[in-house]
Length: 560
Image (cartoon, rainbow, N blue to C red):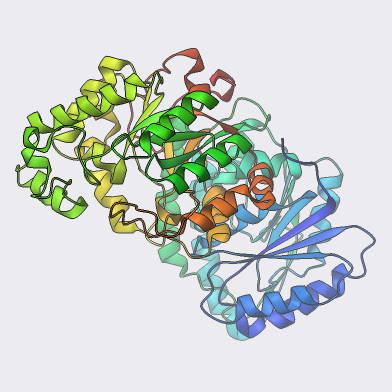
């Protein structure tokens, strides 16, 4: 369960490219918050800013303050919406407010937001077009104001007629939420650009949260924003239709104001590869921080892994492997799969041979049936299937895997589609896996095989594991998802049979075993589950659309 609020008020400030004015802004915030009798926390979310903004924020945080200061650093750019979402979900205040880093809205205006929240409103937004609002600006900027106002009015006119009939200003950068409203709305937020405000307000309107617009004082400074108004108006229009599509498709939980419980499968790959990896996975699963694992069957330490899984009643899946080590079948029976030394072709060579149709489906079936027989002899009941280096998605292999999975009634298969834009790491890998026929949900649905949302590719080789995982977990919107991890204890001289995993298994194990990991999972609002838990009530209904969130079900339908 998420812990209750620790502060009266959380103030979230997204920071990007603000070096020139940041010290002035922080001094203004400090002057106001230092006079307050309430307990505050200030969250500065630095969005992979290329200048000295992060350094300035950390220097400010080290100074003594009568309130709490936290600096959240995004490893890659999440956009304003992504940064605000991260701050809101990590905040611990009873009331949570975000404001723009340029302080176009004086910090004193935050108190107007808080006052309305205390009076019983769920969501309070600043409105620049309220009859009581006032602008302070230089006459030299009148032409810029007109351009901005025209683009804003056109967009709001469309919003009023399609999604929010009574909202006069959706894009003002000052908004406040109760803790309950913030956790409900931001946990479902999908957009990360400037149009995230519309999505939040649309959801708030749909579920019946009370929304109040208040007049504000607005300082219009020269080039105070990086927005290209007309270009962004077009992007906002595009996102508006995306919101409507997601709503019509049932991807938002809007039936009540109860916070949707999000289920998270923390899944460890490569069980059985080595003694050290076995040790790392077993210790993490016994502690409950890893809830599921998948087993390689063709290595000397695979037998040990099978015995450990059976002894501890672990939730185990089959890690299909055709690219590392030696086959279970005699090499002469699967000649298209092996090199002259009797070992599998590595990934790049396997892929090339697969696309050139130099891999025999008969050989693939021979080897995978042999792997399955070895797995089944251990008296384990697999709940899911995935592939080493995602080989189960590749040409020739996918059909054989689907047949086996369907025949053996294994409930789940991994489809490694990780949500993320151009700025999310491993873009080419994610795009390649998505265009494969085996990477389509419709392909597996033909065999009545389910999948859940998947994450983990983008952080597999990250240097800053904690911040990378924090950023990733904060952008998961699905009601149930799998995250892929690779923990292990690295032992000197241990044979990994040419495994080319570039991450640090030892550091990943240390992170998973740390109190910080468990605190982060709870703070963001996840409940850890296994594939066995999800399959507890049998197969789920198959969704008919290709969406990032596959399952059109309510949280209370998921087995606990």
